[in-house]
Length: 400
Ligand code: FDA
Image (cartoon, helix red, strand yellow):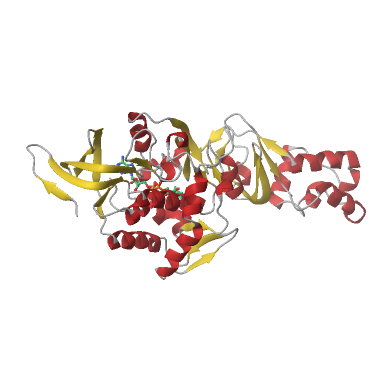
């Protein structure tokens, strides 16, 4: 247990390892750090993002997780932690705790019952090693003398915590309503570490006009390309723009002002299909035939937006080729994104060039560690971000 003494003004506590943030990465680090570890968090409950993740079932890892599923200035950085603590290690832990789970799709593993099972697992692992958790604790200042000193207020009562090691696990900026603050970035800057400019990731894309309002709720099996990366999943039209897994994935690769490209029928050659129907369905309206390869609402919408009229038989092959080209390469330039309000993750963060990839320790500040979403390593949609939290938290915990 941490020891505590009285001073004139501030109560003083000594610990070996102090962890800021009781989210996925912080609790994982605590469960693997040595004795005399304290975790503090300003929230009322630990692991709030775990609780709401995966629609309340937590997509806790991915069977196929590998370094190629992560974005970072240095794509090699995540390799070490991901190989030292793998998805199989976390799956073993889930099994040990008797938590029922299933694969939903594309290697994504979800709890059968509730995301709360994963929070209970982490708390049980912390209890095993005797790590202490303080909630409702605000961090007011951090300084370093011979040790780290964190000035905090626990339930409003001021306290100074002295620690040999400090693990920063306060996450990114996504969903401020849930307590995200960006504290990790200011701590990193305070200690001279570089920050890769944070931006929202896994986020719906928006258009200033209401162009997709008539299509809101329509799902389109698609492939979506942003930059040089393509995802084959569903696109969902919304009142404000585009969402769905393919768009969320692509949003992490999208930059303001750049276009994205949607293939509305990646499994079908639209030209071949329409041409083949000319003899049997030539008297039908082009949009009616088109509705056999793309959702009907989208076919009607495009018929109006792109003035697609007349019977299929009236369409020359050249016009059909152009139409197929437009549908296979529908190019759209979003005006923005829904931002941190709904973004599942924050891209960017503490520059990996300033961290040791084996331990997550700052190269220039011995004893200072950054883990989880705070670091410039961001996973795809599908359980990858939790795997990064487990892997980076584990390696930092092991080093303490
Ligand atoms: P995390 O944000 O979890 O924890 C940070 C902790 O620090 C919080 O407890 C917070 O209260 C605390 N904190 C922050 N600022 C503080 C301050 N100033 N003082 C004190 N404490 C402070 N990923 C995935 O792999 N599978 C999934 O199913 C999902 N689903 C999902 C749904 C939604 C809606 C969101 C928003 C996100 C996801 N994610 C996800 C992403 C995943 O939740 C995220 O990557 C991890 O929670 C990151 O873990 P961290 O521990 O790094 O930060």
